[in-house]
Length: 411
Length: 144
Image 1 (spheres, each protein chain N blue to C red):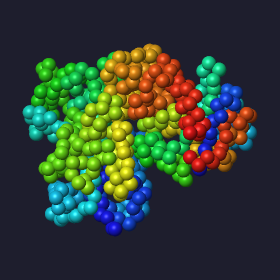
Image 2 (cartoon, rainbow over the protein chains, first blue to last red):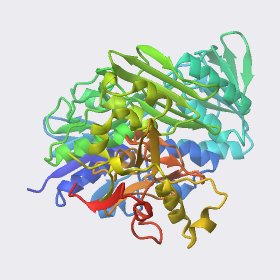
Image 3 (tube, chains in turn yellow, orange):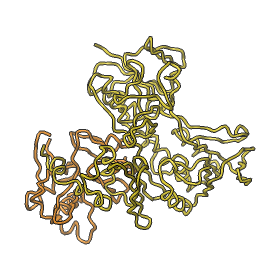
Image 4 (cartoon, chains in turn blue, purple):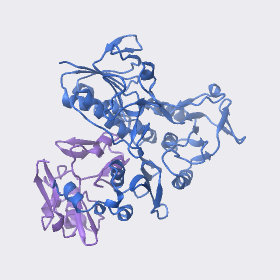
């Protein structure tokens, strides 16, 4: 049977799906709709592009022949405006309809832009989640507009700050008094703030932008900041409205099960647009991260092409480098904390009920994946030498039976 | 596919595997000249504790979490070997965040470093195995 797969979106989740579908089905047709004009590129690389560490040609997530090799009908610059889950049809912005046998919604996330009073009086406002944003910012800065105000000191704001710091005078404002509050705890956050300041970024924390008037920001404490370019980096939210409007089940994102199925028959979803179970807490959560996106996309693609696949190992995780300092984190920061830090070498482990829930490593990140797998696989801590593995990450702590299986190849 | 397997009880903790790995990466012909006064960065690393020792290198997983997590597309599976394109790799360490065996490490060149079973150098088959004096690591097909 010739099956028609339709994919809305063109980032990691879409790529994961295409690669899985083509492992199982060489004959079905795959149509990919992307509102952007580029071939699939790595979104996290945009700050590396601004920094000059990645060239324009190296931002792409897959080789040039990806669509051709996987026999995909790629339609860039085409938005999908409607899904009809009853007639199995999608409608594009040009008004044309497309039927699907299996649909993947991989629409990603969109930047949150709070309704600041006076925002419409500001010239040169950007968000920072797409390659177009990176290109636009580069152009503005190189035209001599060098004072950049970034609203938000989270992942997006700080990577943006790092990306442009050599060419611009950067101030970063956040209403939280901690940077990276979504991925760090208070202790580790303070260390990072100091590090960022020592690299020339002005951080204004615990202070909110109240309003803009022209290219001037008024803050809650009454102070003012003049700027040339404004970057809104106040987080992202899942692009779930297409599916919601179609009558599908959504929370903050599109709700999926461990097969990446949605509430609608033959409709799957993956990546930043979904809400799925976080293994580290057992609760539904939006985990907008590239590794989860790829693996959910792959799982969806596999199930769409009739090869059963379960993906139930999603956890929050981040590998981040800021001005040369490496930060690796995973899981959730709940339970008791064991702190094995020494100076600026931060090692903090959160655990409860005999399980590791989360960790934060800064500076020495060697073998961090061993901790990630302990969270993902819910390894009972009393079956390993937890004290040893915290200080000396390795398979030593896991005992002979585990090693004979994983390293020795014995079943 | 042939992989490197560990016979833990035979490991002497001599670290020769690490030296042979580092040597293989240099593509030089003389191990002494290649490594003299160098801090080595091997793709295989010996763990030691309380008299127990064993060597750990990439398992070339059938379902490689490192490659699936790679944000640039630098990590791919080439004929079963999990391989890194060091030109494309930006050293973000998302793979290190995901490898359950601790088998990937930062390189000195801003990318990552991992075992590619010597498919990427002149040795052709794993130099660590050839250099192991006690068959504590072997290169075998075990149908896994």
